[in-house]
Every structure is written in structure tokens, then in C-alpha cells.
Image 1 (cartoon, helix red, strand yellow):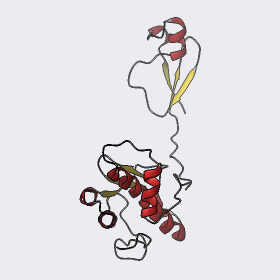
Image 2 (cartoon, one colour):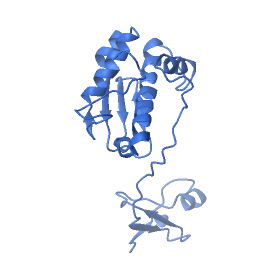
Image 3 (cartoon, rainbow, N blue to C red):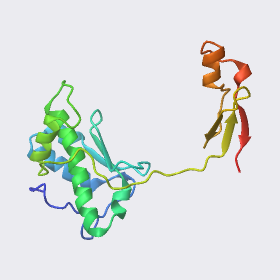
Image 4 (cartoon, rainbow, N blue to C red):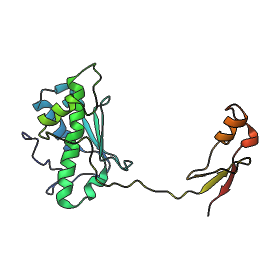
Length: 192
């Protein structure tokens, strides 16, 4: 793929058709080709693009130690025109992080600093923003457990049950010099 502004095609249909989890062979190939075009041959051999269904609010992430890009499958559920634009932009944004790191071996660089901005320009997305606001809402879980301090009646609600003994932090600080004190151990009750 000679032009980073083209839309990569995966699968067989038009536009972006990709798996919803695991390695995306088509995007990995595109990333490798872009790396080679910019003389980053070592990165080209190691780069990998994956879909991560556990991502909730971020559109994508770049892991510079393992040369991996992870994308949020929710990008695929955006309206058609926005989907291709956001997917392309997110893919290139994350690839720019890998470019910037590969071009600066042994140096610590700012995540969205000058090196990253230069890589964005090289990939055809000059002036790229450091984040996108796609409105991906985090999952909300109902809180099932309430824990009450027997001394001050403070209540802490949680989604998951505590697996060990826990005491009220405020009371332990105030009356036990910050150390655990069983007098302030939280009492569990079930909500709903």
C-alpha cells in the first residue's frame, strides 16, 4: 500500500471488515508495509495489530515494548462514514507511537510530543489530536455489596465482594495510627 491515506481493506467487502477480537492479519500487513516504506524494517517484522474486546473507553493503544497496536472493536459499530474515518485515524495514530519510539531508540520521548507529531505527519495525519471523543461509555455494573464501619457508620458500596478483611481507613488513621484494627473491620451486607 503506497499511500497512507488509502483505506486498507480486510476480509472481502468494501471498507473496513475485520474480526472483533484477536490478531487482524490485514491491518498487521498494512502496518508492516508502512514501516518498510519509512525504513523501519525491524519494526515491520515485529509489529502486530489486534482487536481487544476488553477495551471500553479508549479507541486504541500502542504498546511500544512489544510493538503492538490494540484497537477497540466498538470502532466497527460506528456509523458507516464515521467508522472508516475513525478507524483509519486511530490505526495511524497508534502506529505513529510505534514509529516515534522506533526512531528514538534508547530515549524517553513524550507520548504526544515532537517525535510523535513528526510520525503523524509522515503517516499522512498532520495535526492529529492526542485523543478522540467517540463517546464510548464504560460499562456500568450494579453495586451488589455494602460494607459498613461499625464505629463511624461509613458505607462503601462495591460491585465485587471483598476477599480479605478490610477496616475503615478513616477510623484506623484516627484511632490506630493508620494500622489495621479489627474494631473497625467493615461489616458486609448485600444490596438489593
